[in-house]
Amino acid sequence: MNKKPKNFFANPSKGAMIFFFVICFVSNILLILSATDLFRESLFQAKNILLTGIMSLSILTTFKLYTNFLKNKYSK
Image (cartoon, rainbow, N blue to C red; front, side, top):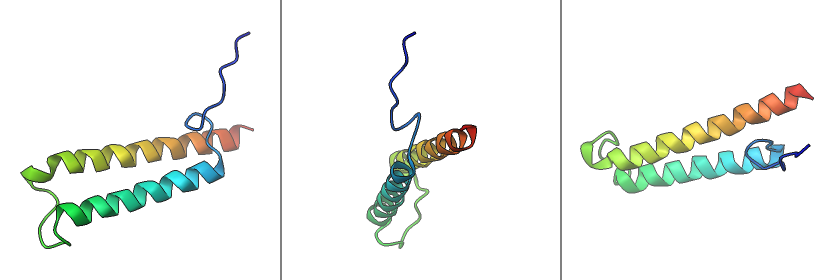
């Protein structure tokens, strides 16, 4: 019986969930501020497609971490 070691993504704790949510939120706000010159231009331009993709993947990863948190919280 080989048990896989627990990692923070598959079995996140409440502290890890809060930490990654804050990091995701702050980094996405900073990316928006740097890409749009303090909201003077739209984020959805051809030159900002890479940043938009990075932000989308960051949000999806944080959402997946949250679903893993809820799944582990209610399965116990």
